[in-house]
Image 1: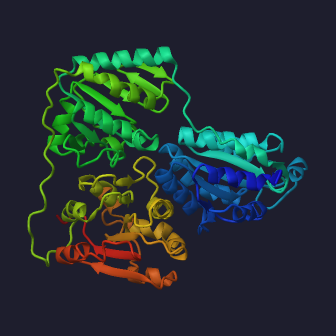
Image 2: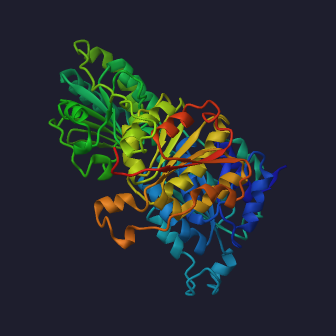
Image 3: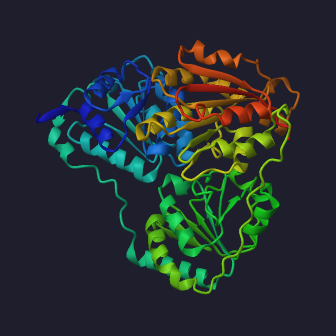
Length: 545
């Protein structure tokens, strides 16, 4: 086969970089393109239920596998996805957004086609997406198309940001040389400038050598930009006390004896707050300093000796080194730091929060008790998805097992995100290990925004755990403002009927009301295996403790 269609070339490339599931919806400008998915062995079309959910799913998939792919149609489809794409941009998640657009001849003639604004401007939606994309490409030259596709895939993966790829309907069936596939896309980082990197290392090592009480603070981009192994090694080599932020939860092994907990500024436990803010050097890895992630910007460091490690720059105190990537700096720091800490005596880290005190089995479920108890149910390698709201805050006090991965959208905070992200993460988990568990915690209000995507899980026989926390309304909003306001109220659903309504035959739907029911269920060996899709409704009050 000396030639293949451009559409197949695209999907062969996507498969080569480890993506096996593609999310999105069909539309008349992408139908011929979608045909090509089935020509590539090992690819599947998830068949999302709307474009917004598809964007959330591609985001969740990417957080586990490093890249997600979303396909929509021109105009109506792509705009419906943009809230999810914007969230991926804000939170450093690599999502390749492929849009089937009208043919080049239709664009040249400025035809008044459906899905347009009726003004002949076929680039308007592309321009909108450019503001929430690392780069974009509107393919209009067949000869240059393969190289543009390769560039978009590489940029999306390296930058961990969305990339927009517009593909005219008339080009997907035209042919390009198949031999181009023989050369893999170069997905490796480019080396740092040697002189700048050496200066950065010298400055960091000097600060470490002078510090008496240094700490490591790991944030979201430690996970997004794949430096969790380096963070782990840095902790092992230095024995510095180590903490995470809410967005960074799961980026450090919480069973490590040098792990101290979650730092959220003034919202932290007093022990954690005191330990972090007493440091005389903070090595901050992959920070995303949003309001929710910092406890409403309430970080109160006592020191100005802060080193920020980022994917595309390093900041040492007030000096910024653009283009110096943290992965290479961390690798070299691990090798060189030992000589600088010969006199360091490890300081104690805050003790783990004590377990729940015994309570009668008929005690109603409460937020405090449940989040403390959850750590006993979690297993090594679990993926835990939490919705913005009580779940997003509550999970901070749960102790994760080794290699657990947390997914939450603390910065963008789009209500309903977690259900779509669950879908993507569950597809990704199944591809990695069919026994890997994916567990969602979502409030009853958030669930109502994106609930239909559960049908996608059922269609593919996927088996996550879905915990619905029935708070009787938008609880976080009630706590912020309007505890009795009508706009914070919702219609109560019969949650136990959701799975069969969406066509599930093999499933479990269970209602939990007491601590005894929780313990009995979560210690059951059969329940601890992801043998079927499960929806658990927990009747829980945010004010209970």
